[in-house]
Image (cartoon, rainbow, N blue to C red; front, side):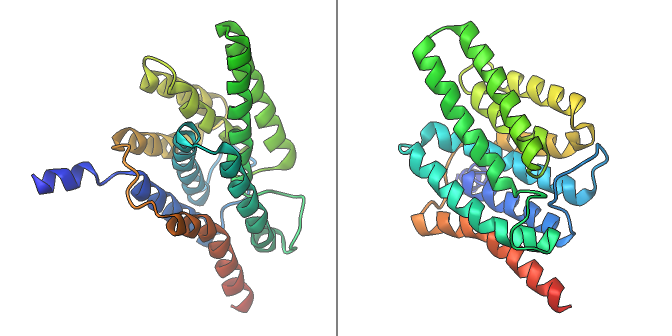
Length: 238
């Protein structure tokens, strides 16, 4: 009984987050992490999309369950700004660069977009208006990420929306399958195996949070900028 319960709780939010950070670490160490400019993805860029897909799943769940979405967005903004300095140093050689932005900004854009979609849905209470709003917000988010060159790919910002919108439907996994299939077929064909693996892990998740102390959440938030800083320092001293 104890063994089966342990297996059941193996894939929870904590373990998914740890796995995503491991994949992100592989990406950074191997020299990926810059926005993808072509359909031909390297293994490092694939790891970045794998990690981003898991973080998108966690973001959508966090958004739906959060009691203070403003605080959630503020945390993402703070750590996006902190991470941008080592990100720019590592990839472009300057502490501030307009050439590319780190992936936390994509998650923040999606979080704000989810709030806009929900606000319109509550005000309009019309399925057609809701559908058009979702499509428009996703399109604007992609445009923002494309203009600002946000990693890992401008089209990746659509991933959190697919997870979030599916939660309101009768067959969420069917919608996710269709949404990710369309996304990969249109914009990210080489990313399909990485996104599919991350989506499968999200389906296997028990929904349990696992260890969730406040200090531990900040450790996870800080891991990305610290990881970028460590790799930058190691490369400059090599």
